[in-house]
Length: 151
Image (cartoon, rainbow, N blue to C red; front, side, top):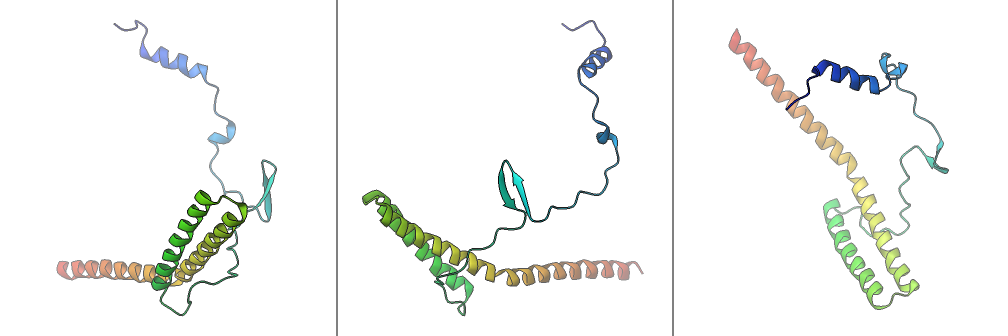
């Protein structure tokens, strides 16, 4: 059925089993620590704190003057073909030379896709800004209409 002890004494007993929180837990939160600069060492491995650099585009496989969506479509087709060729090389002749050649082709195509996508970032930022400004304009127009209706 149930325990004859009151619930409060059970909770007090449970609370006594845990240590008090550390002193910093009760302090008001202050400014966050500054971000580290340069390299940091984590588990013996030195790493940079910034974004990793994009690989150099040694072999450009897309037309930068063409529309980006056309270039991405062509790169996607080429990437699918290169990946299929890599799988065929792994299945039929798993020699290191053939696999490395196909893997290098896939790497070059993925780097090209990254560069092509990065060229779209300014366009995307403009579109996001336009969307935000249109939403603000609609909100302000609704507020103005509500004020006019109230007067």
